[in-house]
Length: 198
Length: 292
Image (cartoon, rainbow over all chains, first blue to last red; front, side, top):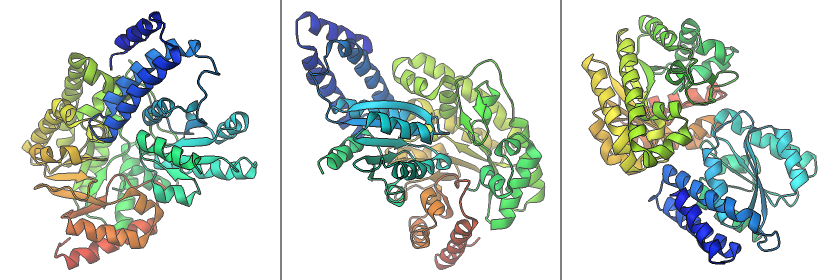
């Protein structure tokens, strides 16, 4: 949870000529996967995960420019955002770091994202997964609008759509014809792996 | 819990005008009380009244959103809340409860939620100081609310085990909540504590808050304190009557004697769904020997 320490350790490992991709995978990602396990076992909670995420990104930001695109191919690409009218993004940020730690490339659209911006991002990025987050019952209905618009623009085929957030559940996901629902980061990663394995 | 946003929606009023005007707030809450005929009224517009009074920017149109941590510019709606409570106390013959934030949640709003959740681990002195400031403000607000002779529902959603560990709950949230409960009870008010989300990890501490009512989500949680809740907000929204009936029965079996939704009724909920819940509540109440 100590971002300064993580930065020091990453810099030290680089000085010892350890490959950046190894530092990332065997150090940072391995650490974040342990954080995800601790969160799933209810030994870590949101404050702990937030601090660990901060530490992860402190190290990741040092390594990112040193890791060529060919050195580490992401498992899949995910477009992720909080729907329009909703500015709660702590949950999305926690899930995002777990997705990245699991080896996925995440295109983060941020919060309060209009339907049209999701559509444009899917069209541009051609992700494998679209992940939608909402913490409010007043905004979760926009998830259905996004799915309908994807169908209308012929962008739905081949795309897996997952949803999450406090008011969302399995029944809601099924009702809007999403491909899955997850209540937290570790289960989101498991769901994505299941969906992508066919 | 039917709140002002549902009433505003039914009456085709902008939420912002209801949230900023005590008379309109009382009007929509009275309207929904008369429409549904439940047994207590909660004076609640949005979670950010106190945060806004202490300088947090809050958007109220179309629905409430906290858009930043505390600055110098404040908008104080607390007098409108108290005015609404006073009107309803005179005009409605069921217990009136005013919703007030727990100090942990308020401190997080003032500091920025994400930042506060980090400093509870990294900068404990700073986190504790903010908590004390929030508590002091709430004790003053509580006194003003109690002066109109109503009851209190303290909502502390960020104190839930969905967010913080039991250790952080005990270190930061517990004492402030207990202090507020004690103060409210000295006036003779009925005092409820509402913590939505998962409370399993802190269930052993909940009775020690000494509240009269615990409004919680976990149907299997065992407490000595009277429990309120039982019906999921997703159930009331989607109107699955079979599921709703089952949840109501389970609630009575698990001693949730005050039947309610686990959290606020979503504003666009169909009135027929809420009426169904009331109907099931009365039927099951008779079956389980619980009188109105």
